[in-house]
Length: 159
Image (cartoon, rainbow, N blue to C red; front, side, top):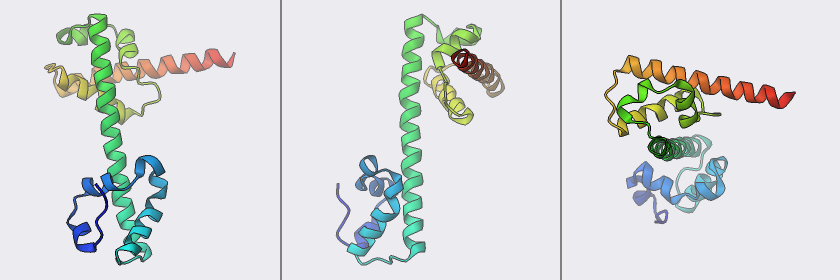
């Protein structure tokens, strides 16, 4: 799919369609402003800073959100596969030791909110019946353990 040759067709496109047409994977979102400005010039749209900035911001935000969703989805599949390999029964996950679950989820450098998103995705995909408060408590213990393991490993490397 290519960007349309006129303003009217561009304005009818969804944000997903627009993001698909811009080469963000190759050029990165850092180039969004310049890509949008060049395209707007080509189809005779307003190339003022505000117009270009707003479109570039919307496109960049959508692209980043899409990439995060893809990342979370891929990681969730890996966690589920690891659980299967280790014989961790989905129904008894909450009973599994926190250090094992910490290794399974391997949050590593993942920020807290991305981690909880991953955790919830796994719980939902496995159709584990766990109330929100319990989910949060289990996630928090796993995440805290992961961060402690990471800190301990960094301390060992410094010695």
